[in-house]
Every structure is written in C-alpha cells, then in structure tokens.
Image (cartoon, rainbow, N blue to C red; front, side, top):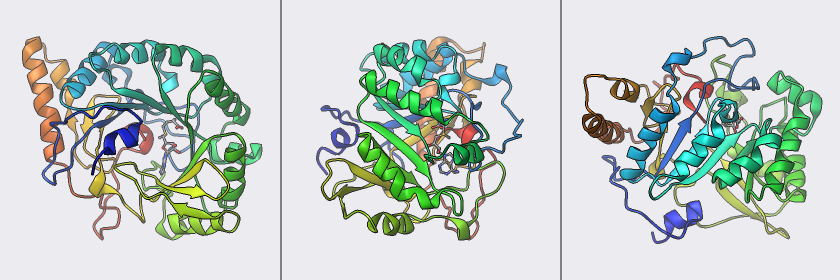
Length: 348
Ligand SMILES: C[S@@+](CC[C@H](N)C(=O)[O-])C[C@H]1O[C@@H](n2cnc3c(N)ncnc32)[C@H](O)[C@@H]1O
C-alpha cells in the first residue's frame, strides 16, 4: 500500500524500519509511558484507592529514556507518543519533548493526556516541539466527570483544550470511553460538541486493562453500538483508507471533520499493528496485552557494560521483543488472561 505512513502520521517522508516481526508487520510507533501516576482515577483504568505505584527508583531517568528512544529511532521508530499515567505529571516534561526533538531524524512527537495541566504547559510543549495531542474526555457533565474520575476537574480539561488550541496544536483529538449506564447516552452530544469545537472525536471500546477488574464483555459498549447510536443523528460513511491507525474513521455528512471509532475488542486491528510500548520503569512490551516484557532498565543500569555494549544490547532487545510479538491481543480467545499491569502502568 503506498503512502501509508505519511497518511497515518501526516509526515511526508517514509522511513524504513528494521523492526519487523515474524508476521511481516513493520514497527514504527513507540508508545512511551513517562509515569504510572495520574491526576485522575478513571474507573475503567485505575481504582480510586489504587496504591500499587512503581517505586521512584525504578522509573527511567530522563537520560535513560532518551538513550532508549535514540536506539528505537535508529532502528526505524519514527513516531513517539508520550503517555502514562499522566505524562504532564513528569516535572521535566518540556525538557523531555525538547530532547526527543533534538535527536537526529526526530520522530513525530505526540502525547495522550487528560489535559488538566495543559493550560500551563501547552505553549511550552509546542515550543519544545510537540506536534500532536490526544486529550481524554468521556463526558460533558461535571457530576458525571466526577463520578467517572473521582476528581471535580472538568473545567481544567476545558481550559486545557482551549490552551492546546491557542498554542496551535492541530488536529486535537479527543478520546472518549463509553461505559454502559454511565455515559453511553452521551455519544451524540459528545460528537456535536466536538464538531462545534473543531475537535476530532474518537470513541474507544473499553478494554480489559483496569486494575479493579470491572471490565465485563456483556457491559461493553461495542463499536457497532456506538456507530448505531451516532447514526440516529448523523449520516456516517466509512473513510476508506486506514493504514495502521487504530481508529476506523467515518466522514459525517455536512461536516469536514471525521469521527473515529476504535473497536479494540470487537474489531481488532492487530494485523496492521505497528506499535510497541515502553513502560515508565523501562520494560519493553510488544502489545498492551503482552504477558512478557523485556527489561531495558537492567541493560541501562548494568555497570559492567560499556556504552557500546549497552547500545548493542538495547538494539537486540528491541528486535527480540518485536520478533516475539504474537499475531493478536487474544482478548477474544477462550484462554485470555488480563495482564497484571493496569492500563495506567503500561501506558495507553
Ligand atoms: C491510560 S490514559 C494515559 C494518558 C492520560 N492520563 C489520559 O488520560 O489520556 C490513555 C488513554 O487510555 C484510555 N484508557 C484507559 N483505560 C482504558 C481501558 N480500560 N479501555 C480503553 N481505553 C482506556 C484513556 O481513556 C485515555 O484516553
């Protein structure tokens, strides 16, 4: 397929990647979790009384992080998404963005955030080289926001969205997870709001990645249901091209903006997956649902290795992780086992 990468990430150039798995999938996208801590407690992600935080000393220091990202870029990664936990909790977040941008052949840099700290940070982040942003917002209602996140901070999200706009971030994508009986009746109003605000909305099916074990297949709001609900008010037509992007995009009659539906559970897109993940404690994962991780932190902190040896070991760790990637996430297999780390500790 021609032009797939540039279509997906909006960049004109297409680089080769050497990170190819046994199913022929090339990997170009690294999701980097900067912390497992978060300013919200979204019920589908982390229980409100969660306390099993990673110890501080296990988190990659910024120099270690940059070393790993440089190696990843040298092997063909050309898109980095900073995430968490909440990436804006990292005190040196602006420096991290600037340093990633200073790498030779810098990757396209994006971030997924709850937006709470964007009012303060959007402009410095853009000045440091941030190009794309996804902001998570599941409801437009203050009380429901509080119910969903255990924090009364919806106004901070709206302020963050405004700041992201004035800093020139474009497109701004909004991630929404719908939960049955909680906010599933808001699909249409969220889309009307997003269109009005010139924001690119994407609904994400809830995945079994919560530490509280609240996920249940029977309560899942499926991609088909979301499509049906939106179709009551909008005429949606699938946008033909998708590439490796997780969202199925739909054009909306009478609008220039599209709406995305990410059917991670019921319409898995593993066959086109080009993503790998680095946890904040330096573990490389081939998939959100991997049961195994490759320990990069031990390589980085091995005082018996020279810098050259460490680099070679990191390169080989990237390749072995990708080579061991399974064909799919397995959520729909009878023997599926939920990973022990919640989404907040893997990086969404
Ligand atoms: C884990 S959060 C991390 C970044 C940031 N704190 C935020 O709120 O966007 C990234 C994305 O994952 C989504 N997410 C978290 N848990 C999920 C789950 N169990 N299923 C589907 N999406 C989930 C969130 O809604 C958010 O859009």
